[in-house]
Length: 439
Image (cartoon, rainbow, N blue to C red):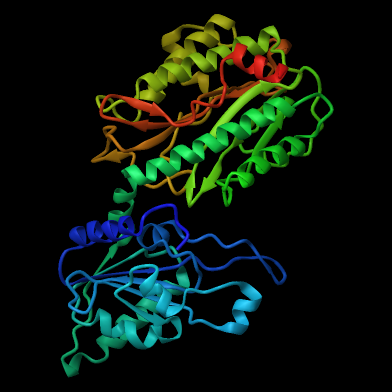
């Protein structure tokens, strides 16, 4: 087991889930399927986040069963058997013995015996928890197991009668990060911050966007990240106005800003940082005005992250500051009230201010409870990422503003006292950025 997290933490998670599941229930969760990249080449395998959260097990072709109060053991893992020939080609396997010894399974069986064994585990249970719709082929398999049990009703066999979404319970657990998880996320944030610093140091006119992407990936991998947490965005010039630009092929020019949205993944936990800086190391007057407006809104939004506020408060803060600033700069016209009422700021700021962060970069967890924005609580981690994007063909503004795109993003932990910035090491003040770029 190569996880940075202790094996005991996975056991605690399973215990918490079982408390919520209650008696006479079973949870069934398949591993992520392998995905073909092209022809006979697969994408590098990455385990399903829910599956890894409960087990720490990183192999494909596996299924978890969790059965509260089962006398023979509550955690059952189906996995591939050891196979010397396949291990020579594809890498080592834990096997059923390793599932018990390394991953704490109470029982382990070959994945080939899944259809033979699972119906017996489901028999007599009232509730089945699984993620309906996540894997359609697996949905069919679960229904076949139930049909098999229903077909034996005359023999006194009782099939489950209630099917519930496992994600409803599991994703609420995942929303609150433990101390061990936060240590991993702090490290992921630190590595990712250093990657952004490296990009700032290497940037200069004439380089291609993909060359900065290469510098970022170098820093991720050399510090232990398994992969970027998402496709890296390196958007220079007007490409910075494309929110999810990932082509990264343009040659950067003097006078360009470059927007980099990049975070590493460390032991299945994501960092998510965006920084925007001038390719030649000096902000122009217009670039600086837009940048400092976005930065002011981000800092105020971060200050609003504390347990006394709800999820949407940082977004409300950002919208207020950006609207007032755009009016001051002349990019918006009319009254403040009219611009807020009609959401006219959305021409330049068209996305939300953040999202949950954890094992997935857009992590799980409800944003509303009973139709109300949920209260922020200690242990939650979110991003704060305001931006302004003035399209190069925007005819409502003076040409000197056109093609400027700025986003600034940090990862924020909610604490009892307020908040902690997990990505503080990445420079974001104008003077600090220009100093880093001067070397």
